[in-house]
Image 1 (cartoon, helix red, strand yellow):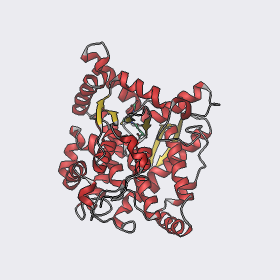
Image 2 (cartoon, helix red, strand yellow):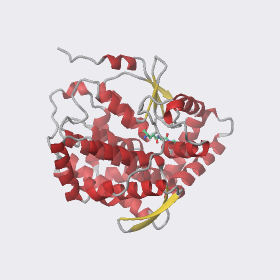
Image 3 (tube, helix red, strand yellow):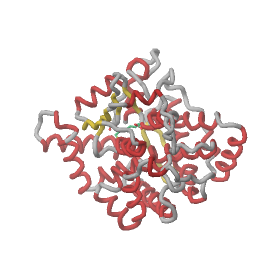
Image 4 (tube, rainbow, N blue to C red):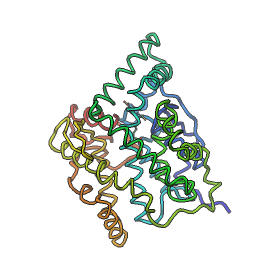
Length: 387
Ligand SMILES: N[C@@H](CCC(=O)N[C@@H](CS)C(=O)NCC(=O)O)C(=O)O
């Protein structure tokens, strides 16, 4: 007998995913929808498509899902969370509350903390920059009426300004950015030589989180792809396994019932890198700064305040605060052992007025920000959220 289908999921029939075949978060969402066997049309975004999605959702970012009833969905974490709360198994989100917390932490960590190395390899290395600059110019910028060479030069300049120089990458920090990629591959490889997915013999939330960077950037952009093939072939194989995974083939697949020891390297990275960064970022946002200085893992950074990641810290704190007491005790003990407890609570994130009614993933320009926000602050929130 097939499991009951939640009536809300009927709204997804005929959905259209707007994104690009080379985009980090689009690849994460496509892998998840394919796994869930939820059919969708795919629309390659051009600049008009991005503006249309922004007019519908209030967020100039990809991917965005257009539903046949006229509603739109945005933000991969929120979209996955909404679908997970309604679809019948096999569960991607672990049922055990403590494991669910750590899965969310890893998804968030992978989404956000591997973004900088992913963008660095794409926009700091000549073969990658030439290839991807030309692809974006020919695909996303296809509706911009200037010669391809000019579009290519413009997109390369924009990405390097925003995601390399503008994201703290300098001759002094680039070694740390590249070392994070190498450590991530080593930690994933150590897991994937032992079992097919991060939490057992079927995909779970953490796998989809790591698909963002590992699929569309690291396994496909020439420079990091070569490093992956040479040093982490099991990760390379896992990327394809994830793309080909279908829930119906995993009806008997099991997930581990506790956080495995081989996730420790990621908890250590969260403890010494990602969570101290989130805390410093939230503190700087509260103080109204545009940039902040922070020392992470012995490296001095000057970074832009990212308001989207103020929300990430808030979401992690909320996820902990809503755990049942026994799970909370277990999670706290594990975070303390990893050194991740103190940075998680170092700063109370300021209210940035984003999604005040908790409507994600169904945002609109009217609901995305608190009405009281000034236009300047809205723009700042938008830039931080949309990157
Ligand atoms: N948290 C969002 C992030 C989406 C996001 O940042 N997408 C990138 C492309 S992969 C984007 O649209 N960037 C816009 C830009 O570069 O201006 C999600 O999970 O969907």
